[in-house]
Amino acid sequence: MEYLKEFKMKKFSIAIPENLNIQLCNHLVRDDKEEDLIFALWNESVGLKRDTALICELIFPERGDRQRHGNVSFNPQYIKRVCKEAATKECGIIFIHSHPFPGWQNMSNDDIIAEKEKLSDTVEVLTGYPLVGMTVGSDKTWSGRRWLFNENTNEYEIQWAENVRSVGGNLKIDYAHFLVPSPKFNKQFKRTRAVWGQVNHEKLAKMRIGIVGLGSVGSMVAEGLARMGMEKFVLIDFDTIEIHNLDRLVGSTKKDIGLYKVDIAKRQINSVGTSANIDINISNNSLYIEEAYKSAIDCDIIFSCVDRPRARYILNHIAYSHLIPVIDGGIQVRFEGNDTNGYEFSGADWQLQTISPNKPCLQCLEVYSTSDVSLEIDGMLDDVSYIKGLPKDLYKRKNNENIFPFSSNLASLEIFQLIAFATGAGDISNFGVQRFRYNPGIISQYFDRECKSGCDFVKSIATGDRYIKVYD
Image 1 (cartoon, rainbow, N blue to C red):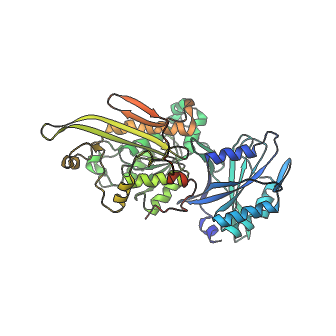
Image 2 (cartoon, helix red, strand yellow):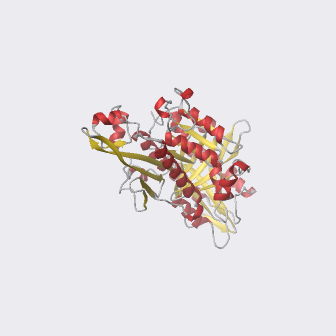
């Protein structure tokens, strides 16, 4: 019961790896229009303000496990087998069934009896976790809930999931509309909605979007999303504004020197945002601090606007272990010359990618190195610079060469990655790994990148914090 006491006031969601979602829908959504059922196991993902059940394994019914008669019911042997598996693997249990109707599904009296009366107490006692229930409609729309014990009434009570997310090659989110209503139309985002369409605009506006790193790129991503009508933001950055930031940090002025970047970003979003209902949570801590880390886990998708290897390593972990996709990008500026004649700008590369199950991870893409992560953890890593190819002494002097046009270009490309990944607008759902080259002025796309054999992050899909702790 301690688990229920601690978390009962937090929001709740469910996330499914895309490959398991496909298997579930193939099993449950039947051509004969009859209902069906299945049990699954889940791992916990504990955020600051939201808990998420991560579906990690399906336990398909065997012969004699269920009775199908238009409606469907499970037999005792099935739940016994599932409970044994859950206890052995220290996981929670999900009861999943289908309805032969489209859209978000409520619960029938029979559904309530099955979950509340027959399963809730047994599952909680045996596993230590609350029972999670899910229903899929005939159009493959999900609804979900968990059952929490109320000591005042001595009964289990339902808490609906605010959304159910399928995460992989694309991001599909089904919402409980009474918890996450559609945004009210606002003339300020009229043109944005006209371009992407009402349905796609609502998909974007309902998401809780995290931005880690509110420097030049992150502040521009925040500004762009706010002007597009996005409503929910989580902003994470430990840094304060210095005078050299003012040439590219959106919304900052000389009066803001010394203030936290997240505070300026929050102010700017509230100033320029076109939505009538803006909700912003901020953390002025590094991502490896528990409070900031758990704030990131509250998100549906995250923009990685950082230049440190440890933060990228943590975001890589979050993308796979917690099923929260990460849109990452970076800039590399090049100089040529020598100490005698000086150095001149010769070009710049922008690379960006969306990280998620069924997509290559940042480590396998060599966006960061594990050795640099270790050096940073030990406090031995030099300040990271976008500049490469410079002598060591000049490198130290020229460690802030990113400029406004570079950052604005990357921020725009990252927002396009979000739109494609989450909506498929314009029949584009995957830009692959993109690389823009200032010289000769082209964008290249790579769709053949994969994680290396034995990648630990692929092995960690939907495990939450079970096997790895990345915060101090």
